[in-house]
Length: 250
Image 1 (spheres, rainbow, N blue to C red):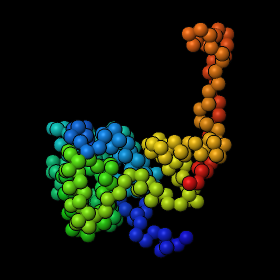
Image 2 (image 1 turned 135 degrees about the vertical axis):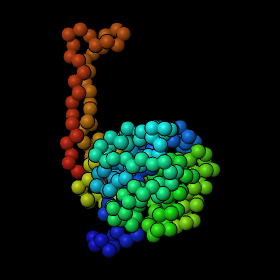
Image 3 (image 1 turned 180 degrees about the vertical axis):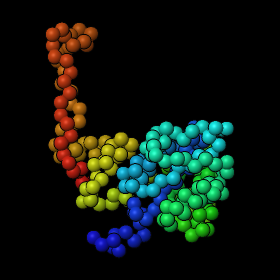
Image 4 (image 1 turned 60 degrees about the horizontal axis):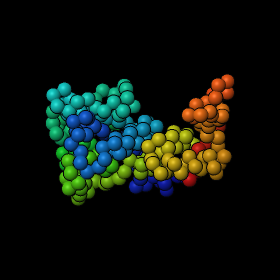
């Protein structure tokens, strides 16, 4: 498959960067348009997609010590060597350090995810569009202080020329073809860990269709009264390991 026929108009790991803006405790507290645990889950899907496919990442935080707290550790731990850019400005693009980091990456397409949508997402997105960047806002890895505020921010960005998409969409757009086996096991791992019913369907296909042994299949000895294992009977023995090298193709 030629790059010209398959990549045109799509994001690839080679043509974009990702910026995570203000994923901090105080900012999570204010989110009201999406379940906060689901939001964090989506942030991690996006972050793991970037890490798996070696996409350049920027982390930035606003007033960590005075108000917002540190970047959520689940995100921070995925990029231990990165130094988060500290800001006081609501608009990350106003930060010389942030704009310099974007320019240093040298890519014209950027995925943005931010808290909150109406400020930390919309402001840099609109200005970066004016600067000629292709802006893709990851809607379900961003959150606003209300449904109205979030949707108004997304509309504003789209009307300015930006594109909205989801974290899972990014992961699958980077993979795009299950014949590409370099990262397919890692991608499937993210899907199984974070992607709900899709993940369960992958597990079903692996075990029931492709006959892959379950990663943990436990055999127990007989139980006595009260549900305890009987004396002198074998304890749980976990058997079976994942043996396939290639993830099932869907």
